[in-house]
Length: 235
Length: 235
Image 1 (cartoon, rainbow over the protein chains, first blue to last red):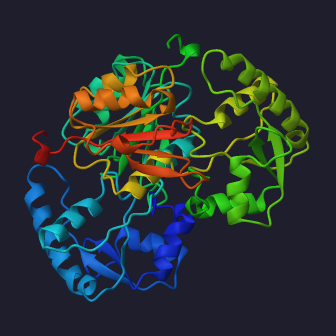
Image 2: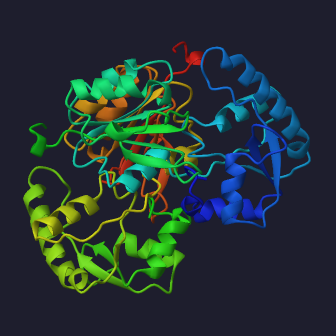
Image 3: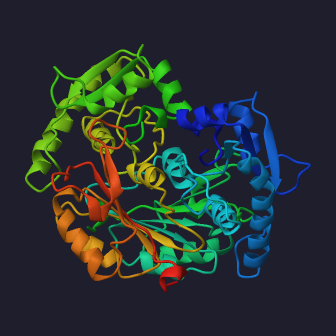
């Protein structure tokens, strides 16, 4: 369903949501709509959505086991519906094949012996929406792009920055923003780098990384570092 | 407008196309609709589209100058409309900030002194559509992704393959498919790699890279090499 802006749903996503026997959405608590539910309801208010409570512990080391247990539990809840032949649509932020809960959920279903067919609908990623919102050209010609995470530190970011003509996108770096900014500054690439969080959601903030207010450091954080171009003396 | 499947247009793309004063589309020859025009008309048959003949020489060395001249010519054609305050929507395959003609066209307009506002609407990329079509999970956990081109050889691909837990996406590699397949085979990553071309367009082919028919080697070619996972003996 894309990064959170209801306008970024595709025609295919809407067609699938409109024709599925059941639409399910992850939520942190059964009493409240999750982000995915809220966004879809803005685009399609007539849809009825079944909430699936997920453990939302971030995927740091300690969280891995709790999350796996939570996926198993959700899979067990889905099984009866799937077994009676229901077509179930699972809504998820971003793209279901890129850092998504969806693949973990499918794995949990397979481990329970479910053999049904799985189809995914691609969604706009947060970094594409951020590039668009900030007027950032990501790639041109034969430039490359690295998409890395900084959940557990800036090692991947450092490595990706080695090539000046490579664009770098950093996901899940909310907790390490000051280190990332310092790193970029040290290689002369802070200028041009942009930051975004909660794109299309409440509390959206997008703009130059150098100007991020200190409180902004959420899980749904994205940094884009464009390639250094000719005009800046490189590549 | 996404990779070519009319179902992958977003609500925002359709809203912009529906409200613009003029919709323009690149085409190789003024007498025939370009790919972008054909796709948009499938989704929105009522739209009237102005064709802009572009030089479609691939962006190899010799083609750079011809292409730049062609962008200048198209920019000159757009100027009178933009100067009288028309809101002009330019449709382009994929995402307008990722290897797109659109950024080159904006540059040409700027060089002619145009100072108007530019906004882009993100689009589903070919690699996301290919992942979805082939049931390929691109990224999980703290894995990384490299998006590289192989227009002028396999150097970038080779480099990106060094890390086993990094997904690699190769664009514009149509002419070097046999080398890419050999390279993957030599590092044990041919299995799981998928290939797609003309996704959503006439002549679409998607499937395992190892099974690509020999004639398939177009400019709009995408290869995905998923990360090696635990079950295959790697992180």
